Length: 357
Image (cartoon, rainbow, N blue to C red; front, side, top):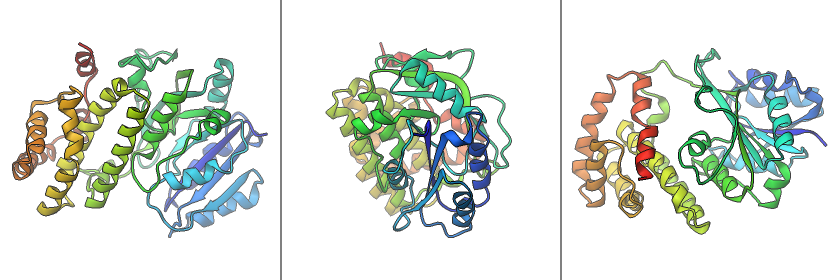
């Protein structure tokens, strides 16, 4: 049995795939101890050919393919889960890369702690792979510790929704039949928080083990913000599934904090999007009205006064007013730095503390 199985979904990443796979190939744990499962989502560039070079050369590298392009990673990751033989499971996106001791660090740590899964620290990197100076989680503020799902500040903050900075016990995943949502964004949030609600022991490790490549970072607005109506329809479906999962597990206490973050995130996705017509914007607001009504039902205020005004008008159905207000905020954000825009799009730790009162 391999020590770790690493699942790598990919689609059109020819410029980054070799960096990703080489970061796995050169792991200090020894490549022979790893199983790599690459799942191609019907790439149209040279990604499949590059991956095939690795699978032809190494017997512990499997190359699979989805039946048709799905556009998101959930289906590919589920295919990967059906083929794992390792004691533990890790995930990486094909345009990102690991620190060279990532697998050894997490494997030894999860074995030592006998945890269901471990989440760790990570850094952003430029499109050319240059690491950003500061990790996502302050290593001075957040030391290695046992997470508590009823700790809505420290534990909540470091238990982010990504699966790429985590390692999971394969038996834990199998026993609880954990799977990703398919065909929608936020599939990893569903998996991560479903795992949290099943787990009896979760640890945070402050070591930086993963590097998230911020593509198009130099552009004024990220390409990912130019979201189509189809994106908002799919994220709406995903958020319903996540809400229902928390509801089924009687964990709306925790969901309130996830909701606070998601509500802010979605509002700024809507504000920054330039791909929607006015008619489509009205349709999106109408379809997601149920989501914004939760602000009052769960007693989760908006983290900024301007967002409170927007939410109130969405709930009351004043959609054209919402569009006008969002247009003003969007114009302002175009002149802000990327760092300031990102900071504005997230609730502060102080905001979460206020929610406890």
